[in-house]
Length: 588
Image (cartoon, rainbow, N blue to C red):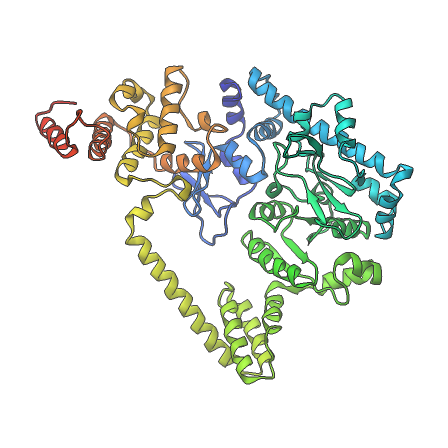
């Protein structure tokens, strides 16, 4: 565990999971637990449970789960150490010095933050050197003011294979650190060279003000047009948004989701200080959840070309999962917000935002654009496509309004459109029920972890292994003698064996076996699995007989698969021999 257990106990005690989760989710008490809508996936019925007794959360829908630290990691997009510091700051308690390995990891992260900051300063200083006039002219030609350029820390990477490498090593940074920060690359011959060369530079800054990565754009039409930092120990694309460090303080009641760095910068310069962008990739669910923590409304302002419109369609689905009110901006006569603002001005763009379409209207128009609505056959195809889209709208009022709009577009009666929508709804309902029936009839599927990367190969054994873990977590006294009675090698599921080995190790060291002992040690998907195992709990009483039965089940499965046999003995003969000795009450 990277932090002292005594400190983590205090941290957990000062950050009750119900209080922390309540800052993100509206919870209602039901029995011993609290329930609410899961913040990690879209749902209409509360399946997200928080147990004050066990200090765990678990979603029966998506399977997410863990303790208070895991919740903060997922909700805020933080690493485990950052989540510890986050909760320590919340509770007003100092974070103690860690072990040497952990201090070294923390020093490495601080070095990378410092390196990226110094690299940003290098790029900024280079931009304003006389030999960088082409880069200066690029930014000025895009209409950016010097004040805006300074605010975003814009810079220029010289067209050199080693300028940054030399400058940073001269400051005392190692070549390994430059690689870890994604600032240099290695050739096939093993030579290091600057990753960014001859590019306008856009620092990416996290919400705490740390420079964590860069985006670089060529000054001409060469390819690739944009080059972004790779994933590093301090930079994860899906957990960050460009300019969120500035937009988080906006007084606007909506965010603008733009497509690229220049669009965001131009919007901020024009007074739209709530603009953000994803980082070189399509919008992710994690980024959508980050947006939802800052606002309830978002306006998508992507490029007007086909790629931009397709990206907008995908973004709508992701943003709606976070219960955001989504509108889509249509930008007439311009390819992007930057071009429109230059031509028409900020007030005209503000008017566009005020007239922006609800995402349902936008989707209808996108469907209509594929068909010639003067042609009868095309109108029928449009109505079928539109009905499929409308059938997915949850609100009956919204559905009726947009069904009326679709009917008008195709020149049919609202009643006819309503019939088609209801037909599509019935098709959806039948498919959903069929899927539910298949799931009910498939106990093996139901017994599998939500995350299929953790799939069990032996369901019978794995369920017994889960029950063993549940018993050991509920009563640590049961662990005595377990390593002999149930060797870890008998576990069929690698993830359950990993947890079991940790339980044995904690007990040998005289440490507490609870969910807190696994936070930051298990991967998020593994922690979700563990919380699901522990969530049902156990009735009070003696459970040694149950434990013995579960061990017997696991033992028998190992006999069946040949793991436990006498040398040269057929597994079936071994199985029969063990069954016979069991009847004679002889333990093996």
